[in-house]
Amino acid sequence: MKQEYIKLYSNCMPVKGYKQSFIVDLQRGGASNAIPNSLFEIIDKYPNKTLDKIKKEYNNKYDEIIDDYFQFLLKNEFAFKCSKQELETFPELDLTWKSASIIENAIVDISTLKETTIKKIISELSELRCNALQIRFEKVCSLNDLKKIGLLLENTRILTVEIFIKYSEETTFETLIYLTDKFPRFQRIYIYNSLKNEMSSCSKIIFDKKDINPSKDCGVISSHNFVINIETFTESQCFNTCLNRKISIDSKGYVKNCPSMQNDYGNISNTKLLDIVEKTNFKDYWTVNKDKIDVCQDCEFRHICTDCRAFIRDSKNIYSQPTKCDYNPYIALWKGQKNWISVEQWREENPHWKDKVNI
Image (cartoon, rainbow, N blue to C red):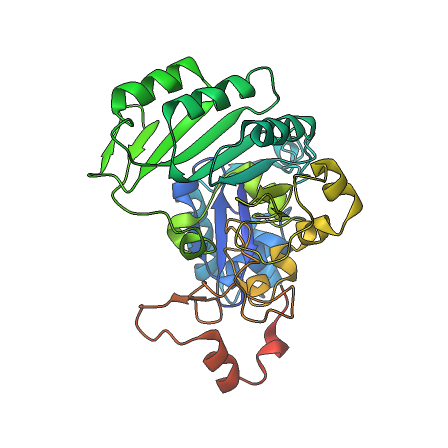
């Protein structure tokens, strides 16, 4: 193996953090794994050197450790052996993110369905080439209302729709499955405040006893919410993974970046969505990516984690850390794990922490 090259698979992306690094396996998400920063350094600095030459770079002081590192990469199928000639035939993954949509996804809150308003919203979202739509009914919604929405969606550019409705005697498995069969764009229907928790075999119909609480659920940072795929990883390189090309309309018609944010940019009743997107500072949040956000920029999970700008620690700083994140990248521990302390406490106890930052 000394004269062989060790090449990372192009779908395995190492991300450096303050305390440790992380290999994101974009093809086998669950196989992703934490690695020491010293291994990240080797991968990053010497991608085109043989194992023997890499050892010489460190004056052969760490040969055994380096052997262990590369055995780990090979065993976990993060890397493979190849010759110098073969090395040149494996291109790096292009991390450029592009979209043909002006708006990628939208959230619409509805108190009482006004057909003219929802028709206008759906039509304008289609003009913006919106792919995904989430509709949240604050009150009981009739099946007839859902049928109207299904018909309005026909012949639009909107591909998938998630619907949240409050439980009523009318919302049965049979009637809702009929709707998802009749209107294929209805990807999923959630029924909240239900009498029991239940799910259809195809997972399109979900009954939940809990009420929905958007402000409570919004912005929660957890390893359970990590998204490991090429789309999210590439988008996160330059854009905000929550707000990029997102739009929301609240039950009063006010247009926002996100339902939980306070600022609005006008009302759907007297303003076109395209005008709001193109003529205001609506896009300001789109490029607030994790590499610019305090604390997040030092975290090894930053390119698989969905951001939040609605709930941040310093409301006056657009680059402030999300309030609902309990991970401390400076000690690589989540709240609840032994020896965890908050980022604030850690920084106070380590006043020269910035001297080490080189991510």
